[in-house]
Image 1 (cartoon, rainbow, N blue to C red):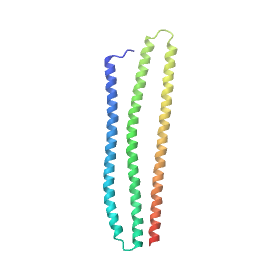
Image 2 (tube, helix red, strand yellow):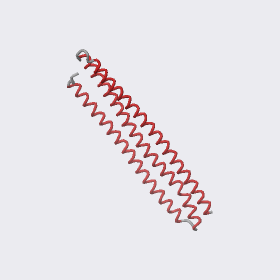
Image 3 (cartoon, rainbow, N blue to C red):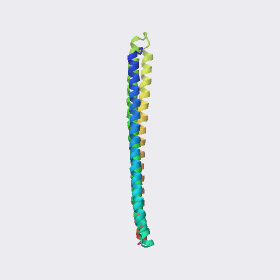
Image 4 (cartoon, rainbow, N blue to C red):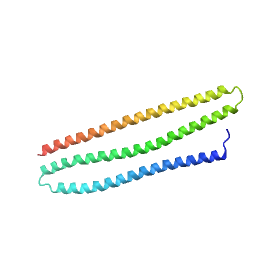
Length: 186
C-alpha cells in the first residue's frame, strides 16, 4: 500500500507526459488556426480587390447591382466554409484532450482498484464490508462519469448537426436572395 520512490517517479513522469501531450495538441490546433486565418486573410484581400475592380467597371447601375448580387453568394459560402473549418479545428482539439482525459481516468481507476486490493489483503478481519462499500462507490462514480460523458457526446453531436443545418440553410437563403436580386436588376 505504500508508494515506493519508483512508483512516485513513474507517476510524475506519466503526469508530465500527459501535460506535454495536451500542450502539443493545443499548439497544433493554434498552428492550424493561424494557417487558416492567414490563408483566409490573403484570399479575402485578393478577392476584395478583384471584386472592387469588377464593380468599378460596371457601366450602369443595373450592371452594378447584378454584379454585387452575384459576388455576395461566393462570399457567404466562403464565410461559412471558414467557420466550419474553425469549428472542425476546435472539435478535433477537444476530442484529443478528451481522449487523454479518459485515458487518465482509466489509469486512475486501475490504480485505485489495485490499491484497494492490496489494502483488502492486509486489512484486519471483518473489513470486507468496508472494502466492498468503497468498491461499490467507485463503480457507481465510474458509471455516473460514463453516463455524463455519453450525454455530453450526444449533445455535441446534436449541436454539430444543428450548426451544419443552419449553415446550409444560410447558404441556400443567400443564394436565393442573390438570384432574386440579379433578376430584379435585369
